[in-house]
Image (spheres, rainbow, N blue to C red):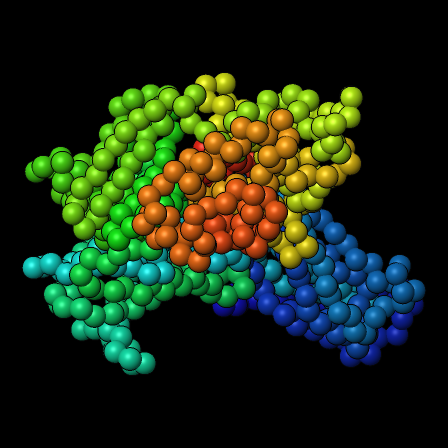
Length: 543
């Protein structure tokens, strides 16, 4: 939108004018625009075409609010007045955030002393950044068929300036056809930088598939309207045997969505409708529940029912979260979603095994050449952490109360990221020659990891690694055959430790060779990376 410009012409006579006058008219000023919307810190760009038959001598730009008083002397630059001039001038606004609107007066003077004045306006309400979802429905949601079947739609979107409005469209999917449901699409008017929606939508109590499309728009100030869209496929059905459900240990849905990765934590799927997780509870009173959708406590949340704490409900409004009342212990929790039952047991961190249980973290435990027959083997410090290559490992800190728990305070810098802008790493160890096959972990899913699993070797002849046999016994050997075949359907039974150490293809039957790869990478700042090498949990949150 353009504001109307004011143009004033002044006539002056010069007895000693050294340049002959042609038409005696004031300069013609044609600006590309006389109003801009910017964000604080952006350049204010003033562009336009200036013409005058007698020749333009000076252009003066003034704005007290911007501390601007600039004269462009064309005679000094070119040696004579210019009949045409393309104005292109930038004003920096970085120090000026206390005013909403700045006015810049542009005075163009020709060789006859005649002037044309234009006013240019710059407003600091510009919006050049698209809105973002802080909470949004998962890409795939399951709604259980009940006497009254309800989809609880919940989202929160925010903008660095203003949310103008959002639209919700709900369609029923039948084959390749999508039909808009009655009452949709809906439009929600924004009122500020954040828009929150939480509503129950009743749908027929029959198996069906729906698609929800949610789009939020910001204001048309700056370089045009920006928008962001979330799509969700909603399956209304009887209780399925989910591939994975997650233990959620945070209080609200904002915290569910505030991590870079690792919140909530994936549980092992150990049988039909059966799931298991090992969870270190540092402090008493942690409240947990179990959800099949990562970003929300609904539509399905398994937790003890308010009516009967021994039975799992599936709606958080009708249940209480499970309270873990013992501090400094591991909880092993097993959930049966079909029978709506759960079991918990606890054990001390000292009873928990890991693949490096018998290694001394931070001690000289690495034999450089893996030759234990020499009289004085070359030993190096054993540590591990995020690694982008054999010569670049960040050392994690071992928890003083739980030797299986490691943390790292990580400052994101530009050289942290891959060439394509991703945060890419594995958990690995290091030594001075860059040989690093002692300890290695991989993740379940590169783009959004939750579990971090041992991918390192088995060293039967290494005295420092003789103890990692008990880790394999615990995880792969001493488990029921039906559980083994359910969790590792492509792997031969029984498990063989020697084959694991000798054949990488064999290892991949149990652990995918996935690096962490977060793209786009996290914003600049400091993050906390936590790794539990017994529970196999990895997470990254902003400090």
